[in-house]
Image: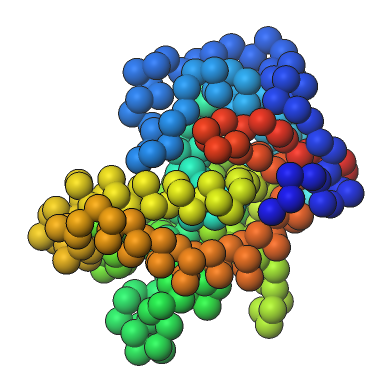
Length: 310
């Protein structure tokens, strides 16, 4: 992936230029808060929060306020009671790029703004077809590719949230079991903001007239070089081998005792055979559709921000 901005729709900002846009936005997270939000092998410090995520939370706060004002204008024009449909923020990017940590920290920051305290986070993992369905269709090896998701269910969920339904339920995915939890649901109750995080959330339509991005108010793409993503994926797998894989209920329990070199080789094979292919074919092409692109260095720090011009 080129370090240069390859799409003229975005304005490129350095880390310093972006950090200056924080203005007087207060830091509302402590180091203890941050420790509980970090994912595996996804380092993020208060400096990253101050210089990258506080400007982002300020930008989103301004967008949310503008959307709420526009909603009031439309309601007044139609002569109907004023409503506040949830503002939906999409977060896309490769496996191992750090989406989950970014989403959790962003959720915590947005929830501390007084005008939109109810912020929910839902991941697209819950909308994967169950393993039995993937196996029946012969696409278990393409888990995470667009065809492995129940798009009808995903669209139904987003439509319900955007329509302001009192309760909307999302399926729950277990990374330990590597499958949908059949008897568990995440209940979303009219949030002010919904963060919707996943690999292919910005995927354009192929056959369907409606796609997930139709419901998004703002979209973010978390980006990094392929070589860095591969190394982060391998390191995360090695950590999981020492932790989650040791549990008998883990889908990858049979990998728990692999020698270090073999474990690294297996992880690299999975990355190059599945995740890299998905990245190149499906995930990366959606980067140009994002309103904001955060570019990470090999040390996980964001050093460049692309902001859509219009």
